[in-house]
Length: 517
Ligand code: FAD
Image (cartoon, rainbow, N blue to C red; front, side, top):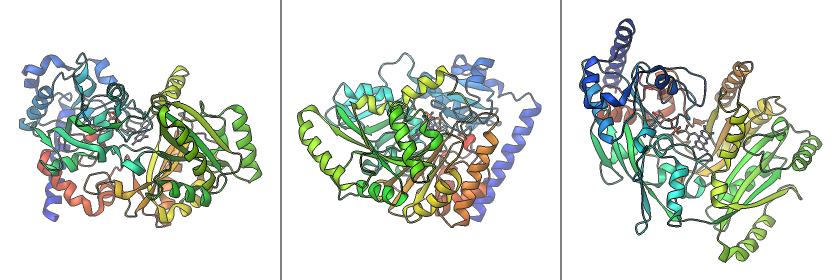
């Protein structure tokens, strides 16, 4: 281990020297790159560079020297192999839809691969096998497009993210979670096979049975081991409609107890989707996530409820029941029985009926509204943690009541539990050791004036967890030191390092996560 780490550090040091040299020589890429067949697909103009220099987080500005617009996997393979065999290897990063927060899809002074370009003008990048119930989809495709295509066969993936204008490769590189995760696992648990281009430029097909070490490493692997160009994803019969329910709570004990009851594997007839939130008073005024759901009167009632209980906000469980018209009556009856078992504040149940697509694409409406008023492309100092169930009430006391209650900054606070047995611990996404753990998402938009304040609050939250001994794992992790990353991966660090040295021996790929660079 010691010699492997020493080798890693010597590689990083060599990259540092290389970067210094490149900086002095106007950060140029090796000139023979522009004699390759792919040269016409590599752009160095300002507009191309700027389009990939920042991301949804709007917290970093990391410019590559060039952008590749591939039209096939071979274009990507040629680029990576060229860097790998070059005496001056340079960084390369695939970029999906750029919805990272901290520059994870950047390649400072290297080449960013605009993955979306792979699908431009090609209608054959989403192929459904109706018989086998899976879809072969390009890594560059958006989940929303995948959904529309699979629905033509009345099929759909089972596991989603809340926002589905993200690429398949992008979410499989982090995990992909939402309210269905408790039942079907994260998106990475629903992948049957991948095509991956490694850090040497090799195109490898992998699955649990074939090149399984690469398969497991790539899922949740933050682009460290290769570029996903195709994923085979399991499908099920698609629901048509959903009952979309929100139940209000004024205390964390009842709120979490009901959430855990709903994700219990014994509770087979429960919700098909379970999430939850803490709506701070300020947030009650509205946010992209809930503005379309609650009416002004609902907000007033919840605001009054919070005030009556001396709280800075209220908790709500968000649940969904899928149905098709033919079983609507039966589903209604079951839902009524289920609601009777739950302990939300009487009278504070809200319900809507929407189509399956409307539900899955719910965040997009909020995006369009925010874009109109310039509220989308602002800094997003987000913090996402997985918190073990045994400490969720301590977390609530220290963080939600301690730091965020009565907070004058609006934003979205997500809290919901998941079952560990739906995850594969051998994949790269890190999760806590306990059977049930919660995801906590602090999804706030900042202005330049309050950005520092919010970032300091994020740090404070991590400090509170550390000093209380809460063994959280960061989701969409961001560390700036090797020590931070080693702690994040814990006992899995050695394997992560082994896989990196095996599949990306020159540490070329996805440097933006700053794990190895
Ligand atoms: P990018 O930001 O472009 O890339 C992300 C990382 O993946 C980078 O390291 C990049 O190098 C790598 N990468 C990209 N494409 C590939 C590829 N083809 N092969 C290998 N590596 C690749 N996440 C959830 O889990 N659940 C949610 O509910 C959720 N909601 C979100 C809502 C919003 C509004 C936003 C902005 C993000 C949300 N996310 C959520 C986070 C999101 O899943 C991740 O940020 C995801 O990585 C974004 O995908 P992308 O296509 O934009 O990837």
